[in-house]
Image 1 (cartoon, rainbow, N blue to C red):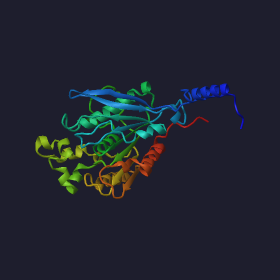
Image 2 (image 1 turned 90 degrees about the vertical axis):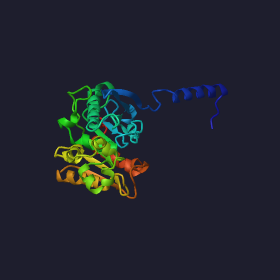
Image 3 (image 1 turned 60 degrees about the vertical axis):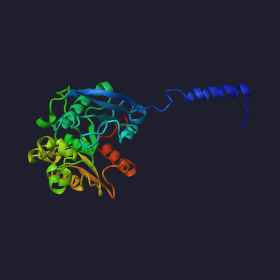
Image 4 (image 1 turned 135 degrees about the vertical axis):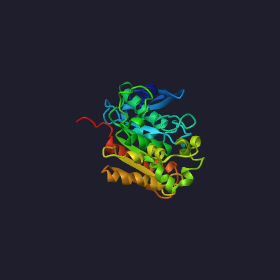
Length: 307
């Protein structure tokens, strides 16, 4: 082995250290924009967090990445946008936004879907500023957030669900793909197959739909709030995850959406987790995370490299 004089060894060490620390050669990090206000309603500032992937995670570095909008769960009365189980998508060329919405201690339905749609419109209106693709947006959510993700996906243009919250009323709230993790889709059906969850005062949906205020929930309100009501032939592709042992939201809620989607000739896939309950790390790990990413790559692929 060739031996270098001591002074040259020192110079070589300095050069190697400088090269390793060069910003141009280091892995780039995700750019985070926290606590962005997208609307104000009921005296509350509605905020979102935005994560922009590094250019070295994109197949084409000057292309704008697709955007995935995450809607948190928590029974429509709790939860936080700070818990983002799909954040690793930013390592694979996707921008990610995690949004807040009014909880049931502040407002009842349809305030929650109004807020979600206001967030989509704000994000579309600010795409140039933050650097993602306004024409390629997916929405995803778990539990209560899954319900709102489903409803966002299937109700574009329904005036009563669009609301007038926020700026950018000229922007569309339509999305191009939906991922639902064990969210309720049909409150009428839930009242029949799971009345203990639908009509008890402890149930989040009972408060959401005005049950605590009125003492009961009307069938009209159940239908109004259910994504199953709005499925049509032009709805975006849908991926659903549900556990066989979920006793909070029964599997029949996801099976209902699958049936309606298939009847409308739409693309839908249901991933069943054997033995899984309502939530848990397994929904967002290993082959299940891979299934979500593959679904997004199929419908909203990161920009392809130029020839």
